[in-house]
Length: 451
Length: 89
Image (cartoon, rainbow over all chains, first blue to last red; front, side):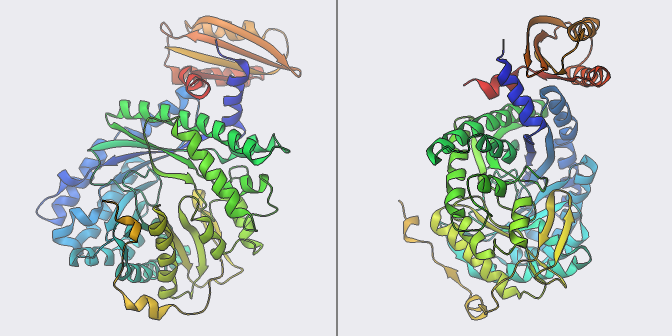
């Protein structure tokens, strides 16, 4: 028989502290869909995704009721579209639209994989593919896109970094009626992972098997509550408590992942050991850091608190799951976290501090809105900085930035739902144009030569 | 398949009677019960066997939540594995 306090603890975590399974994401290989024309490939892609993921909404709903734990998002990630569209890259948008239709048909909120991997070089077909991203994101609703521009093994492709600054600007312009919403669905990575269940950066890597289930767990509220209950504990004690809490959260994720994979006829991929906030109060990573003893997140000490939190979450989670992967770490998306929004509006949290924070957590400058007149080169330079942190530290970093059209510092842009509200944060006005225009490859660091 | 039924709320007479009668109606077999009063709050945990149950676990969870609303208690029915997973190594 179960211990009463254990049972009540689980129920409390779910009912009061926002414990949930953040996403069950099915990764689907599109390689079998490749055909002689873009039109036929698009048709195959639509059918394959609808067939493989046909039951995802029903199965996750049943699991959620049976285990009594909410499963917030049901998603699909696919093979990077630039690969399957290589012979007809200029028509890649047809596949993008087919994927968007499939997402709507399945009743899922996002589908990721309108992606390209150009971390060492960009072939002609990849350039053409990337040029279709802004228009495709503007004309679709649920499709997400990502581009990998660097890695610890290859260095940083600065030509791709330049192109992505321009691509983000163009995407913002084409979706200006919605505050530049298209940019919330576009991520630029360094060291992108192939099994990430989280949007907007999820894609199904070519090293993956045919159909897999990857799960992202969440529970910032649970961790915050655990810390709240020990106001005079020292940091060693706090780290232990965070580890134990992360273990419990991750075990729930592992259970759901294994069961979902079984029922959906897919392989169990990984559990992503994550702390993913939502805009709801009490579901915030910033509030955990403040509970640890900071007046406002972004002040001195923030990086140290976050480093400890991130490490403790991983240590607790890694024993709880048989397969760990994805991005695994605490996320700090500004618009999706009530505490981050408050700190940014007070001017305490700035981009420079966020950049420092990303060197110790997952994943990067995420859901940050900047003034609409920010230049493409400045955005490229922000991407280059993040990619450099990722490349040197052997970690994934990313930039999901929204140059909100017509907005300036002091304004904010509201995307609604899980994407939240982004206060416009200031950027430095001094130019990096000459650096960005040089192009070429920043060579891989010396420690990449491990053979 | 086994599940855990949790009933939490303000203590009053007849809670166990109501819940167990409802479960019997659905052919749910009660294997174990523990009940405590935590600061005036009634907390009952039952381990139940669903092998002869007339409805699916997901439907039973829905029906019990509804019963809970009727009698002013919070009632959850969850697959036992969620507690095994989270609280044992």
